[in-house]
Image (cartoon, rainbow, N blue to C red; front, side, top):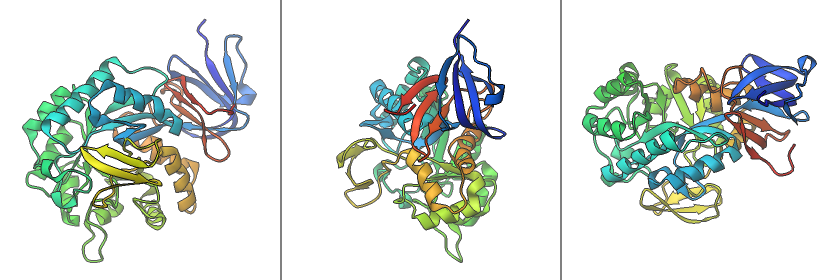
Length: 394
């Protein structure tokens, strides 16, 4: 009989609520059974891990991440994505969208071809799973470029996108666009018809233009507050629309740098049901201070902040596990239930994957994160296989 792994004596945040002093049985990549320890009967074949009161929550899903540990999705190399899938479980990330950025057709094509090849031939259990690709640019507003190279920003181009989606073997799952650009609304409708998440970002859209984009199919905002028209009492802009319109989910970089704690609290109070925690991290994550590359541009990293030569923020070095702790610190009344929604359930629902990811329930993928009393990651399981085990932890 095939051996099952059983986590015992844990506080299990399953889909319906929290089970104190419970167990999870996992096998064949999925969650087999959940229950109270009072109902657990050990099978002789079970591989038992005693959690000693630690907490188990669903694995994190990062829908917006460029790189980590010296690697970047735009490198266009299998080894770069291999580095990412190996290192991300350390922060509780069990799956993610490999995120591109504004660059030449040639470089984007290479990155997409590489990602498709990795997804098709190199995915392994016990590593973070690449769920698809997030195309961030080049269909953006040059006035809101941020760290996206201006010379490669172009208007929406349906034929170019279809070429890229073919190279990606259909794995482009999310696209960030500025809907106010010429052809933007028609492009949003086109993407929606393809089943792709349309996310408004790097945009100077007005409140009215955002409402039009939502009608056209937009369901999300990319890195709320950053590189978008801000909140003004006569011009609500993208930020005002994101906070007011129930149709929109909103990504949020909670590193205390991209968005100050008070604005995180504001977003939490107004949008907590539809926030999505993500990192927007670049290759310097997990590495030392110094000079790095992002889309052919020099990036200088110092004490957690990554900037271009002109001082513009250039992604982050944020870990999702730190974003989780920051939310709990910044937002009065926040809870692990909120964290699970923001870091797991909401991204899974947006990617139409909630039937297999985003919560702990029998039949779903065994993507699990074990947290200690300080909310630090002790263990991470990716599709049933132990992917990370903190030294000294149970």
